[in-house]
Image (cartoon, rainbow over all chains, first blue to last red):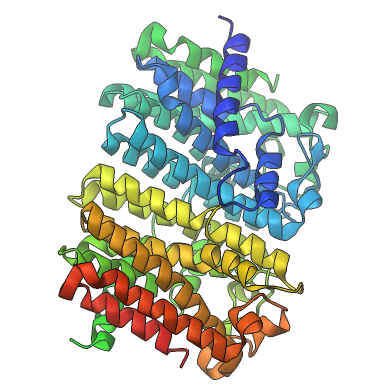
Length: 296
Length: 296
């Protein structure tokens, strides 16, 4: 199966599972569920779930084992976009080509829908950990990985550094400090979550962790390059949004060509890290290439 | 030991554990940790942790088993206060007699510190579940209880209903629907978390669940009555804040005396629910009386 077909199939699987998790039922207010669904079903590529599923397969387990945790990753990613777009943060009115959540539902509901998505991620992971034939201790470890990647030393911390840095002169060390936390932590977390869902032994986990760390940064560099070079019709975001906000990005400190070179160097790191896993990691190799080659 | 002494001792234990969890270290930005600590160490009564510890003791286990989960409850409670106070929500400038987090640290950091506190709650629970000699399956169940109580069908859902109801005519059914979710869910969750941390058998869990449900509502009614009758020097909040915001409260639909009667009826429910647990539940009985009697 080509990577494109595989990604499309996984995307369908993840979307069906998210559909079930976010079904309008139970005690949640209708309007809140609508807001959560608006954010989640907006054409995201489901890259983080795909990485978890691919890592799970790479260690010899069926991808299905990682599905609920892939959903948790996607909910965490989605909540972070909703909160990042808020007027008090990046004040973005466009996301994936549509008005952002707070534009449609108001600021209060956007904050609360984000809160609910984050909470739902952990509910889903805890439920899956109990129902899924997984060792409960592994499920706890996965929840720990999710929280570590998403929290104060990870994604949230990265957003704090990012806001602090806006409009100030940035150097490579600062840009890397921001993006290691803001994006790379959850990408690396996705790989680790998949490896643990698949019951990976310690050596495979270490190889996948090195892959995840390199890929996380490569992913963000590719995103920065796209933001700096592609029109809104491609990114679905305000054109040149990062530069307009004075954001600390890789193209800002390395130039577009320098940023592309850095991404390709990280791609080589990804491939090197996967060597011990042999042909089982083929999907992870092509995913890494896919991510980096978006940026040309 | 009197209830007051016991609460003071538990508070010290919880604060020491929170101090450790929120130590300024690791990869979290300094300013973010400062904001999280500002919110957490602001003189809260630690009632939710106390309920978890008391429930754990009531089923014959040492209170220490519930400490990390008590901390998780307190972090969730604290994040909810930070987000509720935001300009887009209740727009409160005073909390526990001090300026609210967004007044001191700005709105962006208040949103992010809230996000980080919520995430940290789950990290703490997942870590404790692995390190603590607890059955990992019980730890997963506890994480599920926390997420359910805090999420779209619980606390966040209650805040959505609360915002929707502000300034509109309220009846008892609406007020109860709001407060069952907004406050009672996490109070009941605290009792359930403690029971599970203590390894309670099914019958004890059911008795404690009934206690938690009645206490959760009683707690909110007592809070509403205090808000309506006590000066800022007692509540630490803007005087008559609920009425000024047109909030749906028990005194607004039942009058102050009617609300006090409702709280006392729920207190009787709490005591009845605990009957099967005998003298082991003495601390939970006095906690319930303490909560309701605040409101006179």
